[in-house]
Image (cartoon, rainbow, N blue to C red; front, side, top):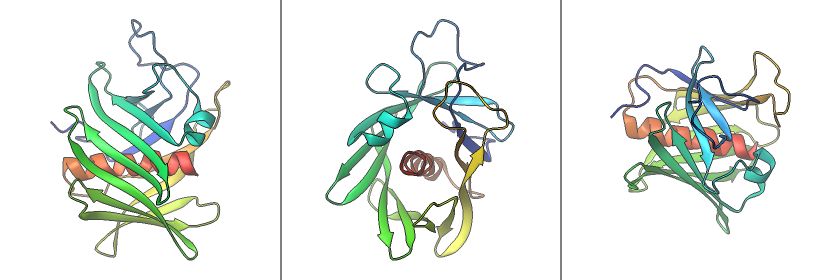
Length: 193
């Protein structure tokens, strides 16, 4: 199933109140993923069962996050790991099958994120400046294909940790697994920067 069909841009947004969240839901998401028109499309929940907040998510050595659609269906889940080899985010589908992974690496004056499939074959490379990155170019075979960049919220919200989060412009003509892995890169970059 293509859960990102017709979506060209996804932006992480923290909100005090989520407009499209079903009223019966008692759990509060960490954030939502909004499309280019700022419509809430997906919600990101902590694996702890309660809202932790971005400072705790950022500092966690290991972390599980669940991405759900507006009908409460689980779409993807992500496992962030911090270890000797740096930061890594594994991306799984709702059937718990590994789709891909994102590995952060430091290359001299660049921050690089290797975005691979479940067999560790490189899909994309996202590169940006090592210090205070505002934008990452998503490369496919050394050619620019997409972009992950910081975007300010259109309206300021009280009670949220950050008013600026990262946004992903999907490369044209990519498949579902590649989109899923890129969403993992978007989340990891947002947590680390």
